[in-house]
Amino acid sequence: MNNSIVILGNYFDTYFSSKNIRKIELVILRLAVFSFLLHLALIFLGNNFLFFRNFQHSYLKAIYTPFSFILLYEVFLLVIIIPKSISEFVGKQFEVITLITLRSFFHDIAELDLKNSINIYNPDFISLMYDLCAALLMLGLTILYYKIYQNNGKAEVVNQLNNFINIKKMVSLGMIVILLLLSISSFYNWGSEMIIALQIDSNYPNSNAVFYSDFFSIMIFVDVLLLIISFTYHFSFFTIFRNASFIITTILIRMSLTIEKPMNYIIILIGFLFSIISFYLFGLRKKIGQ
Image 1 (cartoon, rainbow, N blue to C red):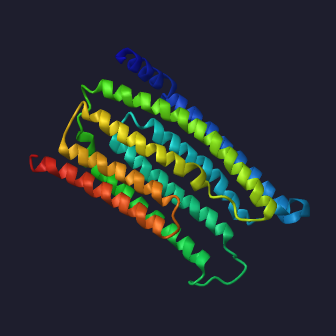
Image 2 (image 1 turned 120 degrees about the vertical axis):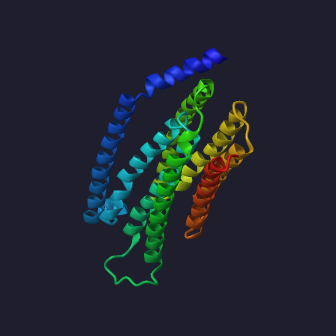
Image 3 (image 1 turned 180 degrees about the vertical axis):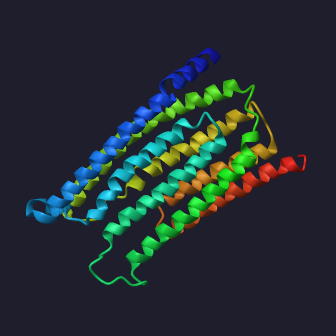
């Protein structure tokens, strides 16, 4: 069993080296550029030719498409960071949900009628303000989290835990397969719903509900699995509480993806604060000799 874990760990190191990750990054960025130009072309046709009227939208909506590819790359980085550190893994989750919030702005700005006067009571304008304010708060809390991690998190003992690291690499490999299958399935379902939406001229389907809600649901169980496995190497009340707080944050992030604004952002920020405060107290206990 241990030999199999080591072999899978070596596979992970081989296929997901810095050089190969860079290649994947370039492929996704090229897809982002192509999708951006294609979306712009479709909107142009929709705005100027009756046959393509179902694609009639603000050109600003095209920004949403390449940003989705960039966000997908961030999700990929989230998966392959699992072997490094649970703390870094949670920080990457903060980054992903912050980028999802920014992407919501690009989606919502295209729905705003810029030809008419905008007032503070306009629901679409208020929605944009929710996106911007929430994104800034999330950015600030993410910076604070990494600051605490630099002060405390890197002091975690990781030597003599090579077997645990290889297990996390194995989990990461499994998550990459799941991510690939989930991406294909979600894209198919989203495409089917998109075709229907274009035919009846209704709003686009919510891609967060199609892909990211499923992904973060899986991440909850991955967090729990890693927490349980970690107990076989290091059992501590403080570690349990810290890692449990990370799981709670993942659950709250998952909940937020299917809740309306501004409640979704309130839930995310509560999750951020819970992890940050728990992480800070976890580091503080070292200073008092616990």
